[in-house]
Image 1: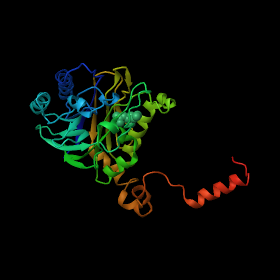
Image 2 (image 1 turned 180 degrees about the vertical axis):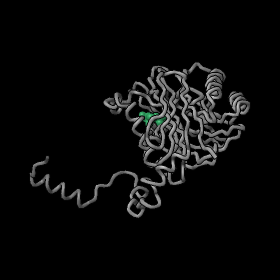
Image 3 (image 1 turned 60 degrees about the vertical axis):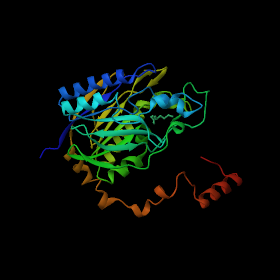
Image 4 (image 1 turned 120 degrees about the horizontal axis):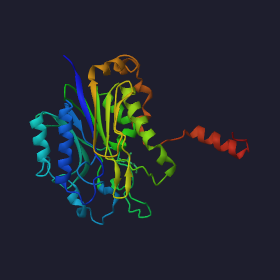
Length: 324
Ligand code: CDT
């Protein structure tokens, strides 16, 4: 049985503060219909798709930001997207801000099957940026104020394969792909909002596109999985966001990439059976991995220079030895 999945990366252009949910959902439906016309089984939308990237602003009380969160999914304004997906028989992936009935806030993504049922939910694990008000920045990145971290990476049996999700900053961490890969993930869906300007080190600004491809491609190759990275892009409330949404094969090759900073759909035929070419050869985990020497990966968070290395370095400095 063929396991060739036609996947659409549905990049969104900017969403301004004044844009309503209804307007955004109309744009999503246009992209969904384009995906349907292109034969897509699955259309992937970005992180925090339904609103502007609100963590760039400080509020004294989180409740002031409640309007940016979804308290139900689908809700009244998002239901037309679910209805249209079911009518077209096209599944989708959607990122949004989630406010639970008991008051927890998450940066969340869901996977919706072609019958409109939610088959998986993921809450972002790696929350970047800061939690304090830092008004000196051109724009802030307050995800660590607005959200709690999720508790792990799961996979789901959907679309004829093993599908996982991650969100934006997660894509920069090899642990993300590996934990998914260790569950046999064949297709990882990753929405993002990546400001081109990085205030702590602006030297990285010119490298945003390169770093995006670097992590998507290496994550795909090293785990033998398809990776779909989808941006919200363009000039959003004075903040330039990276586009370059891409569909990457298990070979690490980019099979499709957006070329604009607006609403744009690119499509690829993702043969899930291609994953085995990598999972059963170079990256045959069961045969070649050595978890017994990887203990540090889960035992510690930050780097710890071993004491003997530290004291040897200190001694060489004290003795006036020249450094290279
Ligand atoms: N949304 C998100 O996770 N963006 C981050 C930017 C981090 S800069 C504070 C990213 O990794 O693209």
